[in-house]
Amino acid sequence: MNESRLKIAVQRSGRLSDATLQILERCGLKINPSKNKLITHVKNMPIDILFVRDDDIPGLVMEGFVDLGFVGENTMQEVSLQRAKFGENALFENLIKLDYGHCRLSLATPEENQYINIRSLEGSRIATSYPYLLGEFLKKEGVSAKIVHLTGSVEVAPRAGLADAICDLVSTGVTLEANGLREVEVMLRSSATLVQRMDIAPGPDKELIARLIVRIKGVIKARESKYIMLHAPLDKVDAIIDILPGAEKPTILPLAGSDKQVAIHAVSTETVFWETMESLKKLGGSSILVLPIEKMLE
Ligand code: PRT
Ligand code: ZN
Picture 1 (cartoon, rainbow, N blue to C red):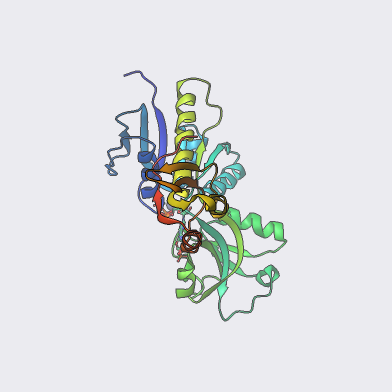
Picture 2 (cartoon, rainbow, N blue to C red):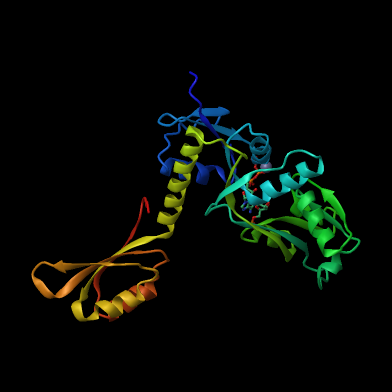
C-alpha cells in the first residue's frame, strides 16, 4: 500500500479522548476505537489515528511525525516554551479552537494565607506541572519565586509542606476547594485545539485537511445552534422574529386551512432559553419546538 495516509494524534485516555473521538466520528470518520492499539486505520478515509499521551502530541506535530493533533492549548504552549529553550523546533499551525477541554491555568494559595497581589508570592515556592509557562509568567510580572516541578498531585503540595502556592489547571474549582486553596491569578485560559505541522505541501493531504476543517467547524456550529419551529399569528410575525435569538432569515410557511396563522422555521445560533419561549407564547406563538441540529454546512 503506497497511498499516503494523513496521521492524526489524539489523547489515548484522558479528559480530551471521548470528545475528540466524538468530533471525528461526527465528521464522518469510521473509527474502530480499540484504544489498546497505538494506531488505528480509519476505514472510509485515508487517515490513521495515533493514540498517545497528551504531552507527546505537541512534539509529534512539531517534529512532523503526525500531520494533525488534538490537544489542550495549555500543553501546546508549555511544550513550545520547553522546546524553544532547548533549541528544538517549536513551530506549528493553530487550525481551530475547539469547543471542549475548557480550563484555566491558575495560581492558588492556601485559603488562610494573605494574598494581596502577585508580589505576595515574592520569594515563595510554587509547585506546578507547568514550569515553563509559570517561569515566563513570573518573569513578566517581575516576581522571583522557586518553581517546584511536580508531574502530579500538585494540589496537595502546600499541605505536604513542599510549596507555598500552586500553579495548576482549574475547571470547576472543586479540587482547589477540597484542598483548602484559593484561586488568586488566572494565567491562561485554555481549550482543546486542532494543530497542524508546518508547511504541508499542496496535494491530497492538504485537501483532506481543508475538508476536515470545514466539517469540524460544521460540527461545532451545529452543536451551538438550534432549529426553532412555531406557529404564529400573521400579524405578529415581525415581533416574533425580533425576539428569536440569533436567527437569520427565518422561513415563513403557510398553514393548511388557515389564513391568519403561519409556521415560522429558523436556525438560532444562540441558546434558546425558557424565557424566550415564554415570550414567543405571549405574542401568540404556539406548538413551539426547539430541536438539536446534527450537521451544518455553510
Ligand atoms: O495520560 P495523559 O498524559 O494523556 O493525560 P493527563 O493526565 O496529562 O491529562 P488530562 O487527561 O487530565 O487532561 C488533558 C487536558 O484536558 C489538559 O491538558 C487540559 O487541556 C484539559 N483540561 C480541562 C483539564 C481540566 N479541564 C482539569 N480540570 N486537565 C486537567 N484538569 C485537572 C486539574 O489538573 C486538577 O487536578 O482537574 C483538576 C481540577 O478540576 P476542577 O474541576 O476540580 O477544577
Ligand atoms: Zn499528560
